[in-house]
Length: 329
Image (cartoon, rainbow, N blue to C red; front, side):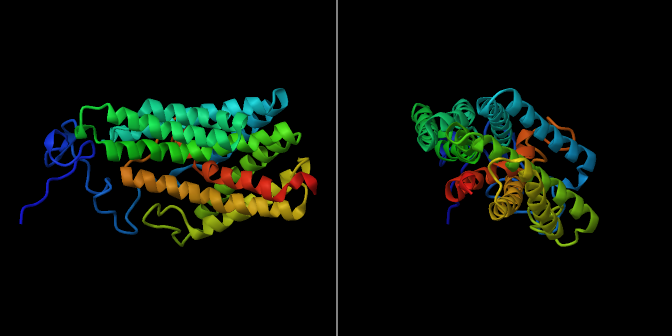
């Protein structure tokens, strides 16, 4: 029986778009079989490239405190608008990191469309609400489709590359847009939006530092060894407790989240979702066979490596506002 033609990452079946055996599109050397979507995965327990035990505690604490201080300064000097702009800047850097690395690994996403949608997502959400989120996602999907429709043929790899473009938009653009939705609460209910974003920053940073501290001190049981052996169940529990405690302490200075039940639920939700965001990003890095998405922070990777936990906690913060309406308590 004849072996069917292989599919290259950048092309379709056969023809000019099929990468020769042992090569990736563009005549670059083929990556290890462990990295691509079709290759084998590392056996459980094998050392991970994104092992985070190498992170030092002072840097982790310093980065977290610096982020919280930056947020407080912007909130005091300006308004929710300034925080939205800050979120857009972070999203732009994270999007650039994501599409740069996926391109290096052999994909050909529509980078300009992806970065534009991801960067403008929080701004659209802040001004137009959930409608802005839908418009941003629709723009990215249709625009990327048009780019490949206008391409010479299947050698452009429309399916995998359009999929990679919109994966980035969904991962960063959709989740990041919830930052705009959270902050929009400030325009309707006083400082609800900025109060909530501040507690979110506190909870995520506390979960990250708490997990790192407890994991290094007593961590023994791998949380998901095939993704990142450096993450442990003990560290996860430590981070969860740290998030609850930190959110509870800082809510005392918060004019919005002042009900004990609401505060505990908020800290619990952030503490649970932040490490899921961390694991998701680590899973992407493992599949791409890269150590970090960026190098902005020495020993901590790039913006995307640092803000992975925030992305998954943002939707929870938004829907917690809608359901709990803590300002009414």
